[in-house]
Length: 211
Image (tube, rainbow, N blue to C red; front, side, top):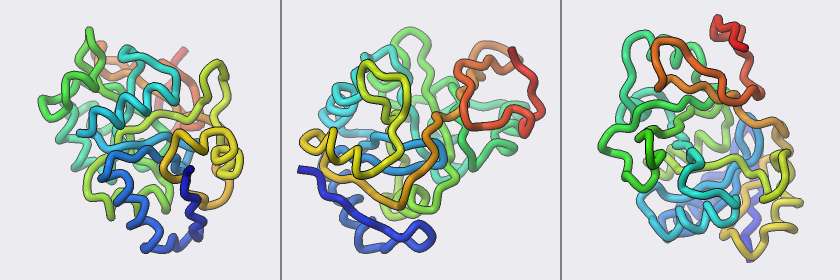
């Protein structure tokens, strides 16, 4: 049964976030609010937790998982970026954008795309998520919480608990978050970004006009 932590949206209680972080360190799977929608999260290095995350989400190893990072200094540890890409990342972070980038050796091979050796990364603009990442001390592996067979992400903690109660260790409730996934841009296929999925992130903020 999932533990529901109700936290203040502007000042999330550290004791609840510490409990959630301990569950993640112990191999747990959690649902957290972000600046786009709810996300499933687990510890990057925990193989069993990653497999559980894929099962709950209903995706295979070809589906890009995303690292939630606190800032761009963490991004550089897990992805290879050139100066032009870094300038784009600075414009977009923190914010509701996911970038597909070439993975470094710090990313376990089983987590990157099996044929392309890429990984999704993003820096969320959400107080609760940022505080949890600070307490946890390392990036979290994540995927948008879209139930199998559906197309819309979840954004209500109560509904998440009702539907995924026995699959999760905890749910963080900081109030309803947006119900729109991130904008996904692939920066691994050449000089120009490729729009993989339009979402909440505005391309004009990045100075882009993509089809």
